[in-house]
Image (tube, rainbow, N blue to C red):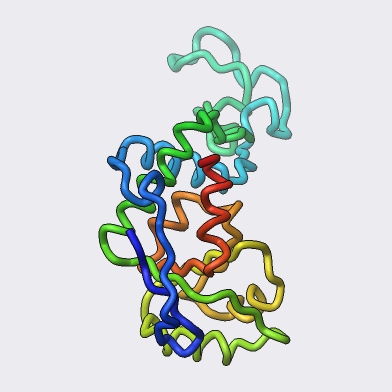
Length: 209
């Protein structure tokens, strides 16, 4: 698959870039996409939730009533979960929600997601660019030139660029990511993916192709 390279004005430069079929034209695997997105979202969870169980409650440890003769169930502690003010039974505890996923499964998931986007015609290639200083106005202008100002946009750079990142930080619908950090969740979340020209060849290095 070949795709035209655009300039910052949204016009074709006359150059074309070949998208590797081993990345953008595979047989998509939906289950690998599900697992990769599930792991990504799980890793975003802090897992710091904690409720007080009976051992964590401050209260008397005396036996609150005699064992027999009351006509009700026996009870030994005011901190029991069955009483108001007692601890919670089987409450949440701090934990790590992350889980292991094989590297090849993650690669398959990213390739599958990129293939879906390529089939939808949601991929554009932009000539390499940078901003002299962080300017949100320049990024808004670029969105208008590419006619994607009302869609979720993912810009994939060959390397991290602080000025481009800062230019998009105030824009809700724009994400910037280095090609080495590309993940399935961000690919699927974006309506349009813009690769800078240098990131296309570097993508093959990331996938060891």
